[in-house]
Length: 466
Image (cartoon, rainbow, N blue to C red; front, side, top):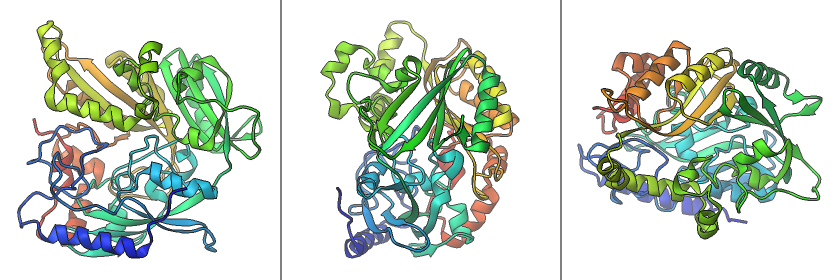
């Protein structure tokens, strides 16, 4: 079990962070001194200013010592909580809480996502249909603002409410207090197969409303569309007693294939939380890991999303494979790495359009409900949305531009009353972006917390300027 870092060590780390911020000259880019990132935006060091966004180098804000759990309070009358540092990964967070029988309300699928990143950006997982997004279970935050001040903020205050989906344009969260959920050690899974998208969408809507299926409680809910005639919903139910056997998808077996191969399954809670990480959903196939021979040779400790991400980032920087493709006469490829949300009653029109216009398979589904209003990502409260995730590259058609497929996706999602996350490429014009992401409110809060405009604005940070 990992140890908590304690308040004294946390205070020292915050002091180092503030000193490093004070040392950055006025007008110079501000960035975190970290090499890894779960963002998929093309950017250079010069164009990557802003708290909460990693640069390509190691200079910048000193976040050393801000990657742990500060304290646990499992006996609070208001419910169990954890005080967590902004750079703490969910893997490290779970390593502290799960031995006590608790997890965060929402644990995003990838181990290396940080709590601060999931709150200032967006995160989602199978509990989101009942628990919302990661920021919905936040009780309090300490934020280092653009003015260099450390501000404690709580729900209902301008900074707190505008912070989710601000991507560091309002500051960096040094400490976040979150609610924790009591969980057992095991999870039973039921994989429901559908041959019709309409049936899937109707069933999903009912599951979110009722929270059960055939009289059995549903604690987690997500799904995969392999093609319009083959799609699955996976229903997870927390299990108290130890089963005779649990499955292991960190070795030769691949989790997403199990949806097609079996109706039921049982995992440990730990393996359930990271079931998608081992193969980066299905994206590890790009490195040959669907091939048993390659998989045997690939060390188990390297079957992780952050390892794959580093490889992709290296290719994005040096473009070795892209050059080889050009030499072979193959077309350039557009990166289509996105998560979008549409209301459940418009899920099927989007999926059918996407399969015909983009043609990327499979796609991931995850329902969610926002528990309150968040101006920087304005979803209707208590309305069921479905996250659709798709991650890969597509050939650029003759006469088309790099980005055209992403632009078409943005237009379709807007037409259907949805939104998309901003961790990857975006192409909105400023007016559309402002309407979709509450830019007027964000600008108002930024004027209060960053009067000298030291931090890059959300639009300038998120939207490709090509």
